[in-house]
Image (cartoon, rainbow over all chains, first blue to last red; front, side, top):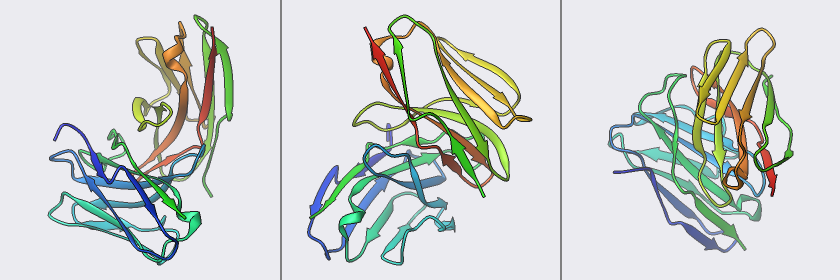
Length: 115
Length: 108
């Protein structure tokens, strides 16, 4: 596709419910990243995929968070038993490769609000 | 540990020049990137420095000093549309680590 797409763009859920966030990277990009951004804050790294494998899961805040990537393309970030502190914008980015010089291209994000 | 420090806010006047500084402490450093993010938008790539010195792209320039663990983004001929948050980021061989961002306010 022309760029990274994410869905849904907005999600309102009740505390305790599970949510799934989807990311479609740019076609041909092998690396995919998930970040979380709270209001007025920086980008908090969550997880990174190279192909379908996740070499670095160190940023996941708790075991309620998980992510998978299938077919080297689409990725899903799942948050189980959501808490109010999970409210944030979840950003996905992809890059052609995983080298240090690679530019990351960001999607528009999913704005999650947990009531 | 690893850290990036940049000012939380900077204010400048339209048409002027502004410099946003970034200092970092990290292992596995490969280079320094800068990203721009407008309110409600996604971050977009501005520049990447792997070597010491100045990289110029139009009105924007970025500088890196590896020995000082320091870099800056220079914006010239400021326009109102440059009002945004600017993030410095350390590129490691495994991931990019972002700073908390500098909010740039531009006065007419």
